[in-house]
Length: 385
Image 1 (tube, helix red, strand yellow):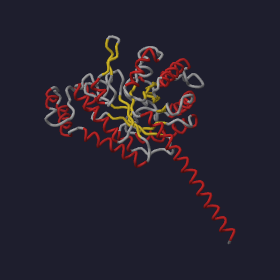
Image 2: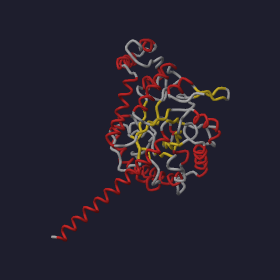
Image 3: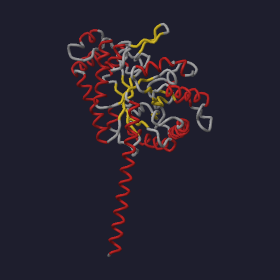
Image 4: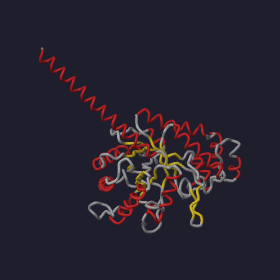
């Protein structure tokens, strides 16, 4: 009997020690995560270098100068997101699957960004943008051989990225996985992908997301993986009828939209309705007016993401939001960006606007000069010179 009591006591002590060790590990991880997250509070996207680049790949300074990086930092932004097209660095004929010349340009640019004092969100943005369209995840989940190849490619790439400080480099394995109509196929692939990358990057934070272009609905249906060093990401462009008015690459109806207002009301959309002829499109605009999109409605949407993160005890990022400045009237665009940013910050969600200098941009390129859009900078709560 005495031996049995001692055995039980020993088991209890071992269990307590195990739980204590687990708690210490969790607290340590939480501390690391909190400090690391501070580097990814406010960011901006830098496409057109390794994604949607024109012609041959160029060193970072040919696309984004040291002055650009200094400007980004002086505005109070803490990180940049670097979208990368897999096709730009992938060489299927090599054992390591990586194009050494392209990779050298990319890694050298990341070093320069980090040296400037900015953190980097490395974003594998698309499988092959050369094929066009917005199905960024391409054959993932459709072609078993390619899916295995993709995971192998990422393991090779992860070993190259391991040289960078885990506190300053956030790893995003796949931007906006689509899986349209088969969204359930993405989570198990993502789980396997994260596990494979983790083998090569034991300390870096990885960024997971839902299917259906990283929309909020994809996040809300996601079950977090068993890895405390994974954060979760979503993109916010709601409502598209406003943010993508005039865009030619999305839904067909969007390219005909003009002067769509924000906030919306039945009265405010009347002018936009007069500018279109299609009755279906007129009805879309009427519905948008009746939905009364405003700061309160945007906050209610983002609260869904915050509640999901709270439920699972995970950290959240929104590394894309923005509105198409070619057709969004400036006052409306400024108001929408302000309301999204305020809602994200209210729920302590780090963010990155899309984008620095393109058609959703924070700055204009004018006669060789970089000019900050002060209204948008103000909407983002940035430091104006």
